[in-house]
Length: 168
Image (cartoon, rainbow, N blue to C red):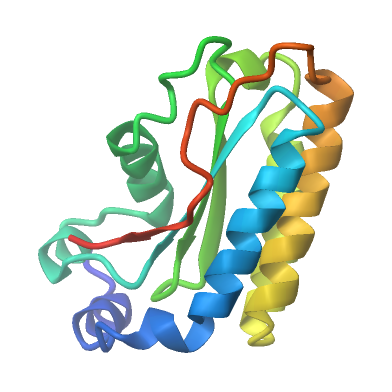
C-alpha cells in the first residue's frame, strides 16, 4: 500500500533543500571530521545525504533502509581491503539516518550499536541541528571503530572523505 503522505513529501521536496541543512562550511567540517576519525582506526567512513527519492521509487515502496543499502553499493563502500567501510546515510525527506557497516566491521559491531548512533543523529537533525548531529555521529562511530579496529602503521585512506550529495 502506498503511503500518500510520504509520496507527496518526496515528490514536492525542493531539490535545493539539502543546502539549507548542509552548508558548504558544514560539508567541509564533516570531511575534516572524517579525516581526523580515520587516523584513529582502520575503518573507512562515507557520509551521504539524499534530498528525496524519485516519486516512482516511493510509490513502489522503497524504504530509506533499502536506499541506504543501494547507496552503499553504488559508492563501492564494500571495496576496502579489510571490508571496513561504513556508510552514514541521511534521507532528508524521511528524516531518517541509516548506518551501514561492511562485513569486516559487522562481525565485531552489532547493528543495534549503529542504530543507537543513528537515533542520536536523527534526534539532532529533527531539532534542525545538522552540525551537532553529524559531528556527534562521526565522533561516536570513531569511538566504536577505534575500539574494534585500532590503526596500524600502514593505514591507507581507501575511500574519499568528502561527503556525497546523492542525486537521482
